[in-house]
Amino acid sequence: MHLAVRRMVWRTLLRHRQRTVLMISIVAMGSLVIVLLFGLSDGIVASMTASQMDFNQGGFQVRVAGSGTDPVAVDAMSPEQVTAAREALDGLGGLTIAERFESVGMIHTAQATDSIRLRGIDPASESMVTRLDDRIVRGKYLDDAGQVLLSATLVEKHDIRVGERVVLHAMSNQGAATRAFRLTGVFEAATGDLERVAMLCIDDARGLTGIDGSTALAVGLPRGMSANRTADRARQLLAGQAGIEVADYYDLNPLARFMAAGSRIRMIPFVLMISLMAGFGVANTALYSVLERTREFGVMAAVGMSRRLLAQLVLLESSLVAALGFLVGGSMGYWALVHLCRNGIDVSFLSDMGGSLGLPRVLYASTSGWYVVAAFSVVVLTALFAAWHPARRLNRLDPVQAIREG
Image (cartoon, rainbow, N blue to C red):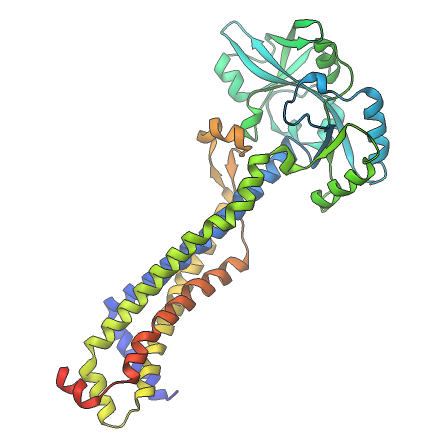
């Protein structure tokens, strides 16, 4: 394209600054929103997965088949089943396994009585599967029988102090059972569903309910090992054991499966709406620019400039504006994602709803260069396609009529 035309484009953009800023703002806003949509959508799913695996569930779990629909203590695996499962999982190598015993129960303090979930753990092996011990904010981690860990939320609600006695109730195979425990430590719940869980030694949980065995084996994975592929391999190794199943992250969090599967699909209408708004804004502004300069274009055509070159001039103006808008919006969106990836968003105020969804207390965004590519593909290309109509109008311009109308 002629150097004179490029200079004319820049001169036009600088002369009509309000119109130029408007078009840049439209494209920038569209690029910004799309980058944030992709980054936050992927980040929420990744935050949920990482928090549950690191602080609650492990990479995957082995449990009695069907116990996920109605988890009660009587669904515990027998000691023989636990031993057989451990031996089978040894074939994978590099895994850490923690036995757990969970049951519904209640906590009784001087203040009130509240429903909770009891989780019996082996403190040593649990610290190799999850990082619960890193979440202790007061007191200490479990190291002896008769001790219990409670979440900071539960402790504040019932005004319990470290060292005080709490009474735990559970349903045993002989009816209700009650036993006093000493609060040895307070942990900060990484996810909403941990706020109402009392951690105690697994032998204490078994003794309280009168049931042997374990309700689940939580399996920790070495860094870099795929949880999905390892869970599939574990299913193959345990296929010969009747009544035992492997539950991966989505089996343990069915609502998370729905969120992950539909996150991209549900974004499609928003992305289309944003791209249409950006395209309409660019097309409308470009068309107004053409109509406003009809006489000017007519004079250019009359002195010898081809109509095709005039159309290219309008397309170049729209291309430059779209590129500037994309650079501004895409850069701002990616910078925002980097900030949210490092600092996260505190969503602890959603703890009531987040408990059922397995939401962590802090959500982090995800960053990827593909988000910027997606914003460019959707917003910028849509804007350029929308600018094609004003360019076609110039391609059919009649110089005499344009000068007369102008």
